[in-house]
Image (tube, rainbow, N blue to C red; front, top):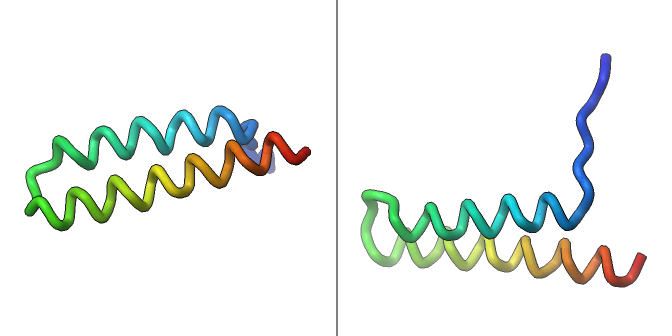
Amino acid sequence: MKILTLRASARAQAHRAMAMAALRADSSLSVRLKRYNQHMAKARALEAQEVRS
């Protein structure tokens, strides 16, 4: 069984895209902002992890 692994930068880019999608979702403002912040925090953490490696 093959497992697809992405570089941290690719995963960070995916989380930035999900963050932008969260802002356009059909949800309340507080939910959209919460999801946006969660995805951006994950993207920042992945980028920081890649810099340290």
